Each structure stands twice: as C-alpha cells, then as structure tokens.
Length: 208
Ligand SMILES: [Fe+2]
Image (cartoon, rainbow, N blue to C red; front, side, top):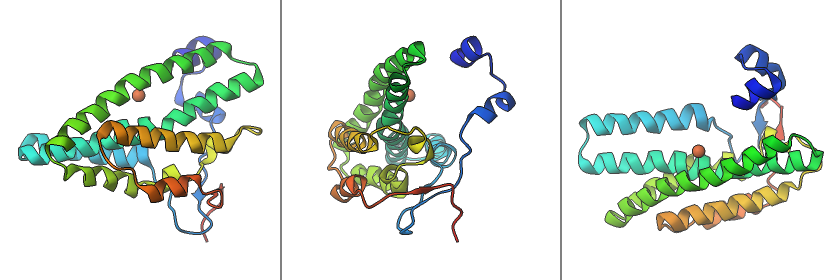
C-alpha cells in the first residue's frame, strides 16, 4: 500500500484494478487438475473451522483445526505458493532494470516471510509430534489445492523471458522444506507433478 500511495499515487481499488491482470480461467487441458481460489475459499474456510473448534471443540479438534489452518496459510500459501511469486517480482524488476526500491522491498518481504512461515510450521511440528494422525490433516490441504501448486497460473506466466522452470524447482524445494519443518513425509507424487513439464496450464480459456 505504501508503494502504491507514495510511488504511483494509486490506492483506490477502482484506480488499481486496471493495472492488474484480469484473472481469466486457468485450465489444465488434460482435465486432471483444477485451480481453486485459495485466498478467498481455503483460508476463510479453515479459519472459520478453527474459530468454531476453539469456541466449542475438544482439545483434539482445536489442535487438528489449528494444524489445518496453519498448513493452509503458513505452509501452503506463504510457504510454497507465494515464495516463488516474490522471486518473480525480484527477477522481473532486475530483468527490466527498473523499480530498484520495489526489488529491495520484495527481498525484505522474503526475509520476513521466512520468519513467520517457520513459526507456523514449528507449531504444526509440535502438534504432529504429539499426535501423528495430524500429518494426514496436512496432506489433506495440499491434496485439496493440488492444482494450484502443480501448474503455473496467469501472473506467473505474465512476464516474457522468465525461466519458469526455476520457479517450479523452487516450489518443490519449499515444499520439501515445509514438510521437513513439520516433521512429515513429502508427497512424492505431488513433487513429480510439479516437476512434470507436460503438465502445462492454459490461461484465459473458458472450459468447454
Ligand atoms: Fe506472510
């Protein structure tokens, strides 16, 4: 928001909107994967389940709901999905030789993310160590939103000339790291799918 206000002087949603990519449908032509809305679907869903559990659930229900929310937010969204996205901003601004302060800002964001991601994954590790059944609760999240992590979506494909394979490899590295921090076994099939070059999503096409 500070960058929008101080640098480009555009802050109102209506003014900002024309400068964002139109989020067209991102489709897996093979029909195997679906790209779902993580920010507006998964996080509110698992957040409200955690709230409900903390008001009226048993200790085990609260713990399981916490593991799922933290797996969705700290491990999946922040810990795997957005880390390569920050790198994309850093690489793009470097490639364009433009926006040096934005580039520096995103490097600082990366450092800060590292701190609170590991807060979330460490909390999961403690709870999973207490009850190993919670490991399945983590895999459930990554499985439900598998399509979002397997393919590249529109904003990741928006800048010509970026080495997109780099960001897929990076996702795998982050996924392995998050699993290690939580003390769980990575899903080998998910890793194979992220690295599979034949899985390539098409952007801006309506199904059917
Ligand atoms: Fe964050």
